[in-house]
Length: 63
Image 1 (cartoon, helix red, strand yellow):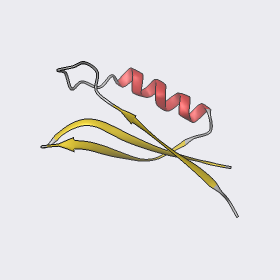
Image 2 (cartoon, helix red, strand yellow):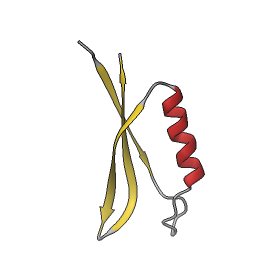
Image 3 (cartoon, helix red, strand yellow):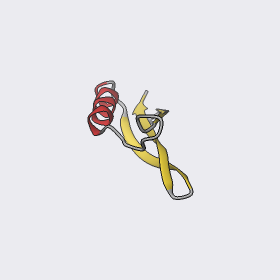
Image 4 (cartoon, rainbow, N blue to C red):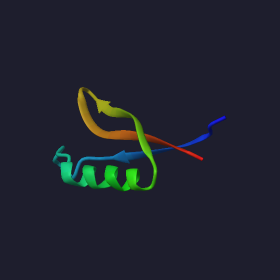
């Protein structure tokens, strides 16, 4: 039987008053997770009043 472990990270926008996400930084994080054997399973938006203030990225890998 296969067994998995899971890990969730949060990526927030940069800046105090800016809601911009650094795509290059997100790719860097996702590629680092992939190089460690983690597979992206889902992304959940952290919304408030229709504005995304962060995302939860959930990964899994076989153990």
